[in-house]
Length: 76
Image: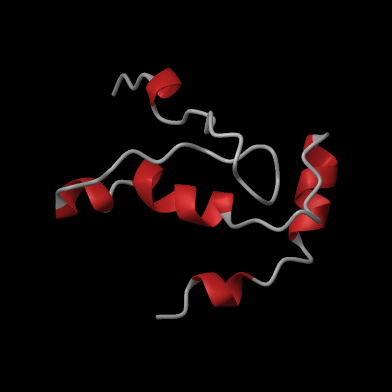
């Protein structure tokens, strides 16, 4: 399957965003089918990462994720 990964995620161009500087833009998902696509579902989780997460290096990113409580992300 050939997927164009360049179109999956885009940095949010808004300057009025709190938290970390790598927030992603989330397009409006009008249809339920689109809302269930991985790229749409993961953006909320990514954008809600705390500022304590280190984005400089992959090893630091992985290590800092160990201290994030993801249970609050999955509560209904």
